[in-house]
Every structure is written in structure tokens, then in C-alpha cells.
Image (cartoon, rainbow, N blue to C red; front, side, top):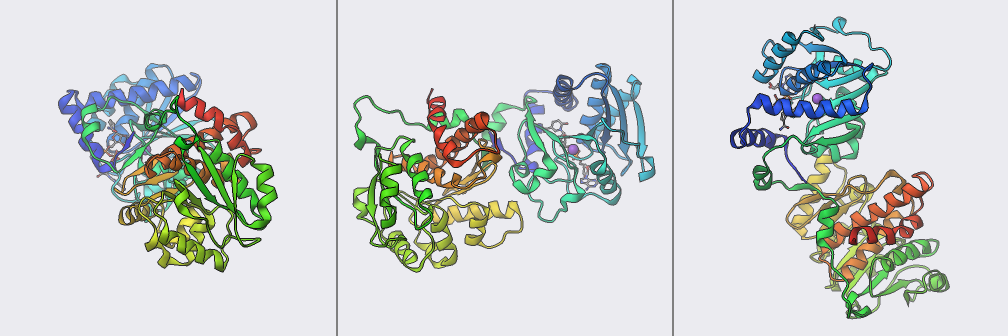
Length: 503
Ligand SMILES: NC(=O)C1=CN([C@@H]2O[C@H](COP(=O)(O)OP(=O)(O)OC[C@H]3O[C@@H](n4cnc5c(N)ncnc54)[C@H](O)[C@@H]3O)[C@@H](O)[C@H]2O)[C@@H](O)CC1
Ligand SMILES: [K+]
């Protein structure tokens, strides 16, 4: 699903209005019907709603919703926030329609004393501002928002929490934005919903289809998209009847050090559980017995050092290389990584300490071979690129670096962001907070290495790897819950995840 900039939304609306064709007021009615259906499905009729309405079309949605909920016999109170005398045409029309219906109370709020008492159990619908917000909220609205946020009520935002911008919120104070429990967005999520920093405002978000014209959605360009299961399925290779282990590649995983052999085990197992033909795991000498016992399917390549990574085997024998989980950041490892980056012409995935080494030795960035996959979490990302002004700035830096260096970057977290050499950004929907646990990233590196060795392009290996990793984590969380989830559980559920996505 493409994610559009707030500035593109009016163009998509206008195209739909002209070419479907549908009157703008009827498009608003359609959107409000979807909202109403969503609410009716979840709430009993004794539920009362307080709807806060602003001057634009977001307010218009709120007013149309008030009428529809009243028709469905819900108790509705509308609070029209008077910041301007002028309402948008569709907002005004819905205000008139609501007055004619005459079944819900309509109050005007021109100062805080006009605000109602919020009794427990009330549901607040936030229809103050939507995607047309062009500057941070003025004082009166800010105070109203603060009162709503402080009240012990459930808050549902229409389209976007009021005060939040769809993209960049770096100059916005999130305390002045509505903190919604649910955000119901029309057709597409906003980019800002996918950034962890905004989660306290957005709450749980859902998209409601409102029938925007498919031709304009298809044609309009956007660098952002949210991937889904069908898209991932379309990228998968099939295993051939007459294939042998050589068909699926030989991977080299450089991983582990004294006290961190678990990383090598997790990454190796995940790699083998994701379809690779052959795997060699390069480890320091002390890890030999550990790895041979824990992962008998992997061959072992032994470093001259007992405890760290200082050298690597002949790269010609391998189809893809993964490096980083648990290698530590000692001086000899830095040198060995430097050499490897300069020499390597094989598909490569870099994680964890390999990224930390580059973060501490910035000149190494320029040696990254084209097509390399880097998989930082936010902290590792900041070690690579310095502090960011906020998540939008971070995403811009990620896209720009991918483009400039022709690399694929995987910024891990909720809605992991994957950027490619064209500056496109793909957000992944699978995964859960249970996966924020030691070793989870090592598992991802193993999966991605496996896909690279099987001949997937860097972008596809990253997309499929991230999706399947999250899916296995979701299946594991269904079985064990999020709190008890450990990285080995993600590996245990890889078979189910692969079966599901290949079916
Ligand atoms: N395709 C869609 O997504 C549809 C969107 N609709 C609704 O339309 C909304 C967008 O409507 P609008 O463009 O009218 O935008 P808003 O309802 O967000 O209102 C913007 C209005 O407020 C003014 N304004 C902006 N920032 C302000 C601030 N900080 N303080 C005071 N005034 C401010 C603007 O000049 C504009 O007049 C969406 O969020 C959605 O709720 C629906 O009605 C139907 C279809
Ligand atoms: K809103």
C-alpha cells in the first residue's frame, strides 16, 4: 500500500470527485459512514459520544458522523470549536444537516469554560484537525487538547490525531497533540504513524477504505509504501524438484566472540531454517565445540584467534556473506572488517558490531560494496549517522544514504523501514514488542544471509527477511505471549512462517 504525503491527499480527492464522479459532500458522507460502521461494531447503544469539531473537512466528517450516530440511536453531543467564523463548505453543510436533524446537542466552545465535564466511560471523537493542518495548534485548541488528554476517557481520532502532522513533527510539541487510543485514517496511513516517537499520539491505527479512485492511487508517485503478505509472496522463489544443495547457495557467516557465541548459534540456525544450501560459520577457536554441538548442520571455519574475529576465509567459495552478530569491536576485528569490505564483491549483510565498527570509523562507510545490506537498530543508526532531529529526519537520512551509496538499509523496530538505492522506503507490518529481546537481530541477519545466498537481490532479501522474521515472531507471540518470547522462539516458528507464506 502506498503512503502519500498529506499534500497529495487533496489531489487524490479531487481526482476521485471529478472522475468517479462523486460530489465532495458525498465522499465525506462515505467516509463518515465507514467511521460510523466501525463504531457501531464496537460500542453498545448506551454509549455516549462527545464529538469535538474543527472548521475544516475533518470537522465536517465529525458532524456527519454525529448525524449518523444519532440516527443509529446513540447519544451524541457536538462541540464546535470556534476559532474562525468560516467553516469549509462541506463542514457548513453537515452542520446545517445536523441542525435540521435536531437530535444531538451542539455547543460552541470559545473558551475553556465552555468545555463539558468528561465523565468516565465517555468516548471522545477528535475531529478538530485532519490532514489540512498547516501549523501547530493555537492556544485555545491546545488547551482543549490538553483537557481531553488529561481526562479519563477513550479518544478516537478521525484521520489523524489533531495537532500531529502527517510527516515531519520535529518542530511540533507532541504534548500539544491529541493522544488517541485509536486513529481511524482514510484509505492510507500517514507517514508519521509509522514512526515510534509518535505512537503515544496515534495509539492503534486502522485504515478505512472510502473508495478513492484506483487510477490516481496507481499513478501518483510516492517513495513510501507499507508492504503486505501478498507483495512478499510475489517476491518468493520456488524450490525446484531437480535441485541440490548447491542450488541454494553457500553462505559465510562471521559471528561470535568470547562470551557471545550465542549470537553465532542463533544466526546460524535462523540461516539454515530459511532455505540455504550450505552454511559455513566463521568463529574464534574457543567456539568450535559450542557451534559444532549446537548447530551440526553448519560447517565451521576457525579464526586464528581464540576469542575474536581477526581474519576470514577465501571469499571465492561463498555466494553471500553475513558479518557482525557478536563479533565485538576489538582492534584486530576492525582491521579484518576493513579488508573484507575492500575485497568483497559478494552480496553482503552487515549487522551489530560490524555496524558499530563502521560507526566508530566513519571513513569505512565509503568502502561499502554496492548492494550491501545494513541492519541497524535506532542506536546503531545514530552511531552511523549522528543524532537526528526526529524520525522524519532519520528517515530522510536513511533514504539519502541508501541512494548515495547504493546500499539497502534496514532500520529495525516497529514498522521496520527498508530503503533502497532509489531512495524508496518500504515499511514492514509484521512483528511485535515481544521481539525486542536479545538475539532477535542475530536471527534476522541469519535469515537475510540465507536469502542472499539463494540468489535474492539485496532489496528482496531484506524485504522477505524482515517480513518473515516478524511473522515468525508473531506466531511465537501467539503461542507464548510477548513477555516470555526469546529469540530461539522466533527460529522455532520460522518453519510455520515459511509454510504460511509459501502456501
Ligand atoms: N480523501 C480523504 O482522505 C478525505 C478526507 N476527508 C477529511 O478531510 C480532512 C482534510 O480536510 P481539510 O483540508 O479541510 O483540513 P482540516 O480539517 O485539517 O482543516 C484545515 C483547516 O484549518 C486551517 N488550519 C490549518 N492549521 C490550522 C491551525 N493550526 N489552527 C487553525 N486553523 C488551521 C486550514 O487553513 C484549513 O482551513 C481529512 O483529514 C479528512 O478528515 C473526508 O472528508 C473525505 C475524504
Ligand atoms: K483529527
